[in-house]
Every structure is written in C-alpha cells, then in structure tokens.
Length: 536
Ligand code: XMP
Image (cartoon, rainbow, N blue to C red; front, top):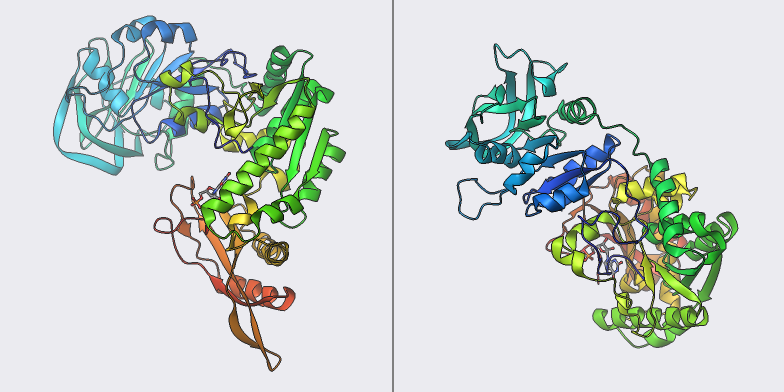
C-alpha cells in the first residue's frame, strides 16, 4: 500500500480535513496560488520560519477565506498578465477582510490592479538578478528595515506596477520596475515585485520574516514537536478506542505515519508488513527490528517471497510483472486485514504535495475512498492520514523526532514493486539474491562517499542477458549489473549523476569480485527524459 497511488480526499483549504487526524494550528498563513511554480516554495519558506502555512486556490471566496481565519495572506506569483481576459483575480472582498497581506510578483501586480493602481506593460521583461534600491525620501519601508538599502533580488516579470493605489507608498525600485515594492502600513498590506522565496534573493527570508514576525505578529511556534503533539491529539480524537491497521512498506511515509499513530494510540495499532521477497538486502530484517523491537509496535510480518516467485515465474513483460506484484500485495493484505475484523481505521501516509496535486475545490468534495489502492469494496476503513499537511522534508524531521533511525527516515525512494522492476526480464529468487548483493555494494560505496543524501536515487539493475568475460584465465559467461544514479527534485525529470570515476571503479571492482554470477558492470548515463529512473 504505497501512499503515492492513493487518491487524496479533502482539499487544501479544508483545514482540519474533516476528522482525518490532521492537526490545525492556531495561526495559519494562507498562500493563494495564482499558478506559480513557486507557490509550494512560499509555503515551505513560511514553515521554515515556524509559522504553519497552506496553499489555497485563487478562486477562494471572501467567505471561505474568512472562515479559515488566516493570520496573514500571501498572494503568489503566476504566469498571467492582469491585463489579459480571464486572468486570475482575487475575490475583491478579501481585500476588505482586514487580514495582513503580502503580494509577490503577480500578487503584487494584482493588488495594485484591483485596488486602483496602475500596472504597465513593459517593452521588455526583467528576468534574473536585479538590484533593488529603496526610494529616496521614503521614511519607512517596513519590509526592508534592517536590510541594505541596495540589495540583489530575483526577478521574473514582464508587466510592472507604475502607480500605487491610494493609501499605498512605493518604497523601492529596480531599473525595470519603478514600483518594485509598496506598502500600506495602516492596512498591513505589502507587495514586492521580486521573489523573496528563492535563494537567489539573498535577503528574501529576512523580508518574509519581517512581514510575518514583525508586521503580522506571528509567533514562531510551529515546530516538529508541536506538529507531533497536535497530531497525537487529533488521532486520538478521530480513532477513540477503535483498532487501526497500517501497511508498512519500509518507505519513509508509511513508517512515520505508523510511528505517529502508535504514539497516539499505542496497542490499538497493528502494522502489516508484506515481505515480497523483492526488498533490498536485510531491509525486511531492519523493518521488523525497528518497528517491533525498538518502537514496540504490534507487527505482522508476512513472509510472502515464495508466493511472489511462484506467480512471477515465466513472466518477463514489465507491466505484467507490476500487475502481479500489486495484486498479490492487495490479496495478502486483504487476508490479514479481514482477520483483524475489528479494525475500523487504515493509516495512509498521504503527503501534502499529493493533496495539492489532487486538486483543491473538487478534491474537497471527494469522500475518502475505502477501496483506495485496489482494496475490495467490502473491506471498509476510515482513513487516518496524519501526514497530509506535511512536505517530505518535514515528514523526515517528524520521523527523527519520533525516534526512527536515519536508515529509515533518510532513505531514498524505493518503488513499490521493489527489485521486481530492477531485474530486467523474469524474476527468480536466484537473480534477486545476485541483485541484492550488488545493490548493497552500490549503496555502501555511495554512503561511504557521502553521496547518499545528495543523490535522488542510486541503485543496481540486473539485466537478463549474459555476456562473455575472462577471470583468472577462465572464460566467464554471466550477467551484467548496471549502476543507476540520478539527481532530481521530484522524479518528474532527472539527470544522470556525474559520479567520480574512482567511485565507479570501486563499485565495479567490488561487484565483480564479490558477487557470483556477475562479470561486467555498466553505468547508465541516460537522463529522464528520455529514460525513466527505473529500468522497467
Ligand atoms: P520512473 O522510473 O517512472 O520513476 O522515472 C519515478 C519515481 O517513481 C518511483 N517508482 C515507483 N514508486 N511504485 C512506487 O511507489 C511504483 O510502482 C514505482 N515505479 C517507479 C521510482 O523509484 C522513482 O523514484
């Protein structure tokens, strides 16, 4: 039961998410998304300043906004021009709610446009670094207080504000943006044409901090500790004295979700770990040890390797393999879940990016599906989703605070079908053993080189072919291992990693010397696209 394939019910604007064990802190900053590639980054920056933040769609109404009672609103950038028909707008009544506001880029232009200022269409855009200067004769420039009067900022815009609305003061400019910042101190409304959220604006965090902590008065108390405390309370309120089950996959999300639920309801939680036989070397032992021994969680370890190998015998087509692996997982999980017939809740490790991706308004209307991930309809559970407001890096921090070891919370992504999609062709127990051994060497050497966290993924692939080699004067005829290492931000695109030659050499030597059945090592230098990260 991987989390990535679950449809996430509940929208980003539904706050406590209708009893899904999501904690709702007292202070929330809502980031209105105008289609910016940076909306998530803004929300993360606010959270880094220890203020809880969520993203809401730009068509949120004033009534919906007021109902969320945000401490502040940030309007994101976006690709549109305010002059274009159908360009996204903010419900004008939101400006009248008296909530402190910061507009960024398109958000800055929109505030000007909707409140009676002027946005000009520039002859040319301003992209990349620009020098921002505070305007002469402006005595207060609260956002930039304590920041050098001349600073480098990151710009990405075509239109520019040329006249501020009534009651506003222009406070800074760049060569192509005469009003690169403005403020209305009385209404606590601010705007910046540049992007304070990106690292290329070196004082950007200071500007956001000034807005949130000084102007708005947010308290910096959204910490991982506070997230855990609030989640524990929310889980207890949702679950009561009922029983909860969780499918552990060995991945970060299900592990942290399980640890959180266990902290909240202890023995009411039972985890089911389906060992497909397609896990990495010693991975299953580690899962069992961590959860059963160290966390003291009731764990059912289903050793299903043989069943998987039987089903996979003779199958080499990738989609057919995936289907078999997925369906067998569901069947085994279902059998065990039925035995725990008094369990009413199912833990899911859904994360905030899944929630955002699944949409906003529409998603809010979808009820949690009980048959998510292919579970049959008659197996009904309510979902407990304690991570649905967290980004991946926050989940890792929460995991560490809950006492999970680094090997689990810092691990690289691993596909649900496991080594089954890293053995090209038919999967057999013998090939799994070869690949586990080679993969362990790759992981050891990558870790020894200090690259494990830097790389998005690094692993070994076994091809179902054999090539000729020579070892100790003897002809060999054995499998090749392909090493795959990529850099990526989100797995949508990836770049093959330029690993040092000596590291590649060490891995190659060790694999050929230590792994029986392998006589050749290749390095995959394909990026995504055109390749995919996994080979199948
Ligand atoms: P590809 O190979 O499509 O992989 O570039 C993108 C990312 O997704 C992971 N992956 C999976 N994860 N179940 C998962 O939970 C799967 O079936 C699956 N297939 C690929 C892959 O490891 C990479 O991070």
